[in-house]
Image (cartoon, rainbow, N blue to C red; front, side):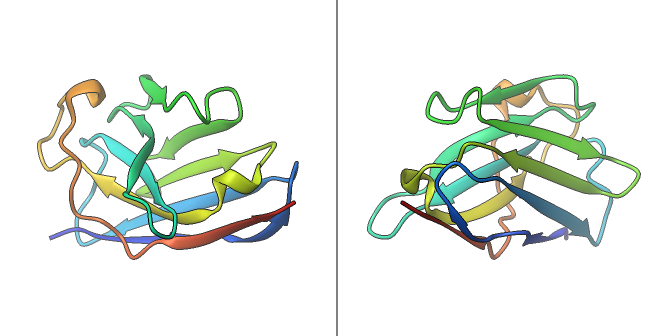
Length: 124
């Protein structure tokens, strides 16, 4: 059973940057697609970004495209989310998740095994 632990959240002014990390333990995730999601108060969880198991394939929600960058370091069993030009509407709890099926294309990943999340608050 994999455990995911997010870190790097915090309070930042609009226009600022944060880098989130998602460290996996329990087993390697190097063969699995990974994703970032977020949930704002009173709203449903929404997809933010996904990355293939090799790291070559990435995709993003339209709302973050051009501002956020997902990456992974399989030697560290960790996935990152670099968030630039942050907006108040980016405020949410950010969680990472892993696709339980190895070697599946990230575009068809069925993410599960969520972490606890890290709070990102962007002030205007």
